[in-house]
Structure formats: structure tokens, C-alpha cells
Length: 275
Image 1: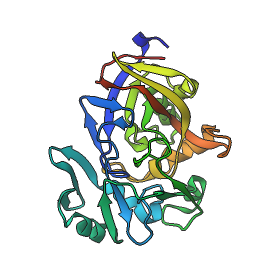
Image 2: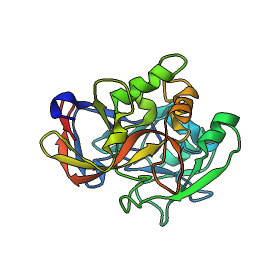
Image 3: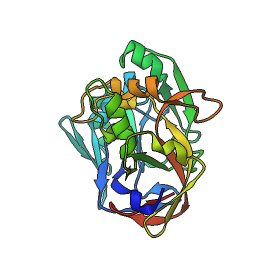
Image 4: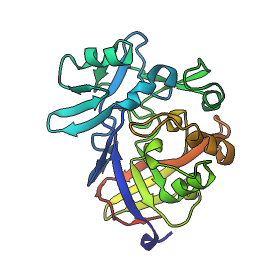
């Protein structure tokens, strides 16, 4: 794929893990991802685990809140809530909304863990059902961070169109898949699959190594702000695009890819992308 055929379509950052995020006009990408991405997380004080919409029965309301970075930290809004990460009462306010006692932190707990619901079970039984969970430890990709697996997530417009073509309502929205970098690529198909093991140069400086296809959890099916609950956003992948991202996982519904940062750089929409 040549630089003339692909370019950055959009950049996204999620200042609080599992909350809605913000679209950026420019992003500085360091060894630990987009600056300010997943800078904070919500912790369930009862279990000590990181709250994640990957466990929708408990945490799907996280995706009704939006986090945006400002000069002093992070502002969190939605569902009548408007608090700042520096406000001592922020955790109490969020606890009341979420129905569980939570804390807001920038420091991952030692051996930080989160629960991920089986996506097939969620499709079968619904987002409110008690379904099998897999517990994973964070920080393997970048110690001291809240990333699940890797610091950068990419998705192409070709994949979004492929999902839309298979969706019963002929629709898809990249926001459901929470990418950092959306790459504008002609055609429709899961083009990122061919990037695994290869390097991407984006703009003048940024170099990424694509390491694995992104296995999808229940999150794409959930309501995201103004996007309604849509099980087919996940079901399309479960039926039509299962990939083995890692041998230990077996075939998973996948869309997009995870990447490591080989060379930091600043990127903007319109920058060329070359494999």
C-alpha cells in the first residue's frame, strides 16, 4: 500500500478508560500511545478492579459519559453530570450515577485487573445477563498504563464499510470500535489483517509496528452517547470476520489492529500512511 492510497481520516483520544473520548486536530504519539490517552481510570473500590464496559452488566453506563482534556486535567460530562478530575467530590458524584462505589485514579493499582465478558454470551443472553467473564491483568504493553494490550489502536474506513455492508441496517460507525487512528483507505474489506507484523509510517515521523488483530468484546454493541444499543455491530464480526489474534484465544470477532510505537511522532488528519 503506497502513501498516496491511504491517509489519516481522524484521531481520537479517550482520557478516561471506557468513557467516550474526544476527536483531535493533532496528536503527539509517544512510546505509550497518544499523549493523554487512558490517562485516568475508574476503579471499583469493592473489588479493586478497573471498571470497564467490557463487563457491560456492571459498567455499560460508563459509555454515557464523555471525558475531554483541558488545561487542568479531565472534564467528565453526561447524564446531567459535569465534574472535573481534580474535584475531590468527582468520585462520589460518579458513584451515585454508576450505582457502585468508585474511585478515579491516574495510577494503576498493582497488578491492575479488569473483567471481560464473553462476547458470544453477551450476544446470546443480552448485555444485562450474568455471563462468563475472563479476568486479565493490565500494563503488559506499557507498564504503569491502563491499556489492555497495546498503546495504539487503528481502524480503516474500508473495515467500517465492510461492517456496514454486512449489517442488516447497512450502517456502521467507527466510534463504536474506539480507535485512536482512523485510516482512510479505498474499498471495503478488513484490510488491516494484512498489516499484522508490518510497520506503518504515518506523517513525517511516526512509525508503528502492527502486532495483532483487535479482538472485539461486547463494547461495540453498547450504546455510545447518541449511538443506540446495536448488537449487530458485534454480531457482524462474530458471523463474518473471526480471526485468531493469538493462539491462546482461538477465533475471535475482530476489527482493527493493535500497534506498538517504534518511533514517536506528531500526526494530523490528512497525513499519509504507508505500509
